Image: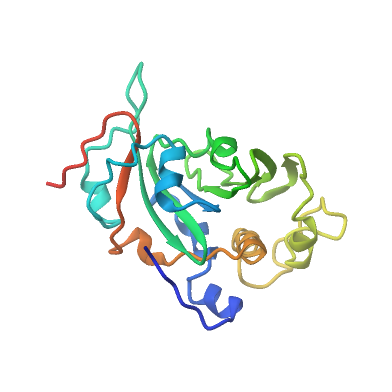
Length: 225
């Protein structure tokens, strides 16, 4: 499992790309990322539909694209695959193809587990963020559409979004483009979420870092050529 050691500076980590702000530019490289606190990676995979005894050997984020994954299969489920790891007390699953994270948030979050789910949605923006805990979705919104929120506590992150110059003080109006310096609004929102929940993910998870993979849906071929 990944053991990422930081220098104690959240701002430095984000600037170095080791927070989660960099996920704002990850559309097309990954179909989703789930963080879960309170269960190990193998249990996260199981709650997403995997057979916990059927992990592959560790494979990299570049090798995953060489697998036989059919994202869409007419009249049937597409293939969903995840790679799992652990960092800073959070298990995580990197989702590929027709994965199950967006459908199983409450199942993943049962028993007091906390879950943060990010979906890039490059073909149908906006990207989506959800936070669930103890079997319920507490808050969620689209990046760039933070004024429209859902969940049992939809305003949970509003104070942080206001402090980060994503929303004006009314919690509804977006800060005007061009009035706030770098980083971008999407990055600021991901920074808010990362700092609030203590999330960090190295960019290497989408590159050469090798992690075990599981099938969560369909019948993909997991043999590398």
